[in-house]
Length: 65
Image (cartoon, rainbow, N blue to C red; front, side, top):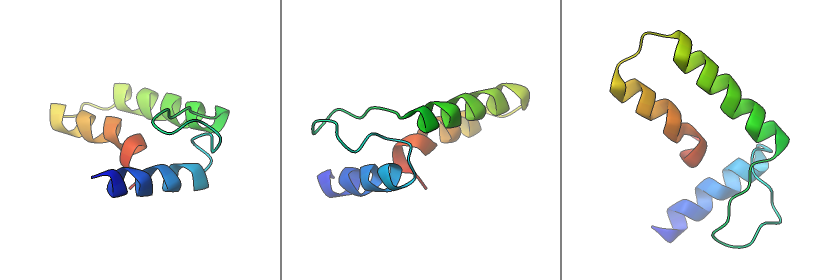
């Protein structure tokens, strides 16, 4: 599981959403990451989605799919 988390973190850093310099286990959003989170939250609030769809949007940042 640690390898999967590391891959997800590396993808988020490459996209500019996470700071590359944080300590292991601490994930800090960059300003670009915060902007993405705000956009996704606004979009999710505007759509009449099912609970499962909202959960999928919330986890996008953690898996960087």
